[in-house]
Structures are given as C-alpha cells and as structure tokens.
Length: 224
Image (cartoon, rainbow, N blue to C red; front, side, top):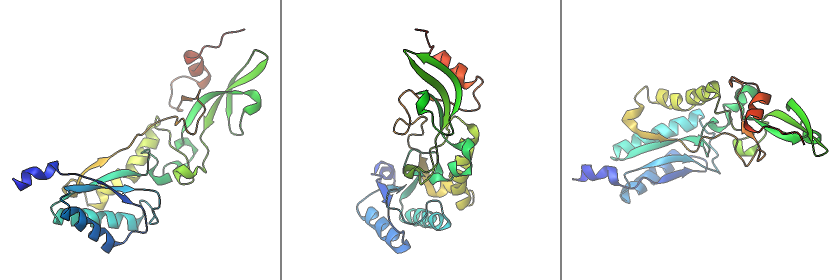
C-alpha cells in the first residue's frame, strides 16, 4: 500500500539559490522525507552562487538524486537556470550571434539601431519607416549577460539539448531514468515581449522567405 501511494505524494520545487553544500543538501532531503514528500524538483533560482551546469553543479545534482533514491524518493530536474528554458544559463547564446533570438520589426527610420539590417523602407503620413531584422544583443542580465535564443533555429535548440539534457544523461552514465523521474521544461518561447517591440514578429534565418517579404505577407503596407 505504501509503495502504491508513493507516486501521489507532493513534489515541491526545491530552490537552489545559494552556495551549494553537500551536507546541507542531504539535510534538506531528509526534511522532505520526514515531511512525507515523494520527491522534489531541483530548481535553479536567483541567488545561486555555484555556477549553473558547472562540474560542481553536476556532481551535486547527482549526489542529490542518488541520495533521494536511497531514501525511497524520486528526484526530478528542471532544465534551465530560472526560465524560460532554452538558453542553458547563457551557454547557448554565448556560442555566437546565429544562436541568439531574432525578429523583424518596424521602426521609425531615426530609431534604427546599430546592428539592425534594413530590409525595406517606406513613408507614411509624413514619417519614414524601416522594416528591420534585429538580433537580440548580448549583455542582458536576465540571461546571465547573454540573450535568449532563437528557438526557431534547430541548431540553437540542438545546442541546448546537448549542453543540458545530454549532459545529464552522461552524468549518470546513460542511466538517467534510474535516478530521475523526469525533466521539467518551462515556457520556451520566441519574441519575449519584455525585451522586444510590440510589433515584433519572430524570424529565423531558416525561413524560406526573405524578412521583407515575410513582413509584408503579415502586415501589408497600404499607400496613403
């Protein structure tokens, strides 16, 4: 009976938000067990001092998962440093501009940024506008000094899988399923409105049409 009920027990998000310590992790797992929890989700959060996805991080993840199994609990993983999933704590966008989030937007000609690639220009109601292809710049603290990734780009997504999920698989010598119940992914997205203009449209270089034509198909510009 006890074994059958195990899967219905609570699984709290366990925030790792400090300098990680093996003994302290074990102590908290003991607390979860004493409270009747069925397991936990290891969740990187603001305040984490131990570098995310570093060798130390990986060793402590394994330690926690193995110890949870010894206690009859199930450890679950979270696949990102905070959220949204996809940038691997900054590792993916750091590999180069082609991995970074990109979009098409309309801007007044005077507001075109350095690095914008102008794809079309037009005038309306006495103002000059440009349709530009814009790549999100690095340096965003929200993404550990990088940017979000181009989730429409298969190469960027592959990089994320390689340096996150595949790395966890290697950590457990191909036996990840024996120690981890599953991996939670959180809100992978494109064109995050917090960091892009309201009129931005997601775009990737793998699109079969040019940025200018793509924009016109969505928002035809009528002459006035």
